[in-house]
Image 1 (cartoon, rainbow, N blue to C red):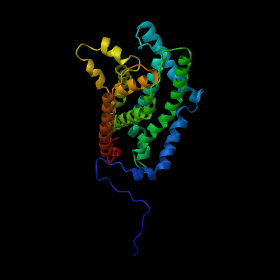
Image 2: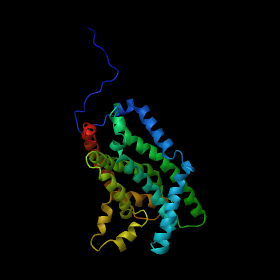
Image 3: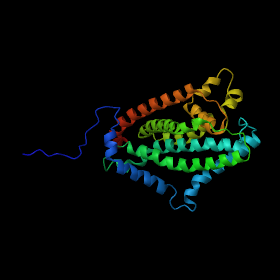
Image 4: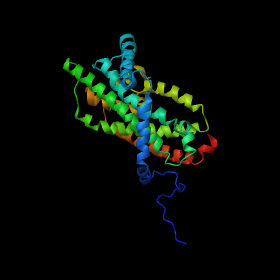
Length: 286
């Protein structure tokens, strides 16, 4: 009897840490299809449609301007506060969207996962890629506002480090993917985590330099002797580096960026281990 040559063979994973790039490349068309689906359906059947990509950061920044600058009198290192807040929100929305959507991977896609095989990692990857489109639109808005303030004489100085912005996005994507996969794996047994994530991500924003400069947080808001705890947040260095590069203000250290990069890699590896372990049996427990 002649042995058949299969085009593709599905085998169980032998290792916890398994990231088969060849298999993901084989399913690249499916990945792009999910990316397109996420983009097209996000604001489908809404009146304003993609304009919400622009309305969201503008309204959020306006509210923060009123609450934190006008009422709370929070300063922003000499930078116009609205621009300072918009810079933080541009990055924050990318991170939070990736994290929240990734942390719901198993629950929202259980029907698909139970019927057809494909690398499950494609789902969180598609979320991260599709969120880049939203980030790109909001980033262009930020650049327009930045140019407006520069023309009007605001004390803004672009640094050459703006060229390293893709690295910042990569680090944020790895952190959101890693933590998202960990939470998603845990929600297969503990559904309450879904509510904790929604509440926790809102609180996390206020310990990240989105609306309050790190200098102010260290000098005025952190108890004496605990100032260094601010820098343990892996997003602190990313946001400070972004604002330092585009606004010319903020604190930037190579150590902080390296710390965030190493942290993102460790979290991503941990997330892959837990995600791969969970996907083998999640359909029996979800």
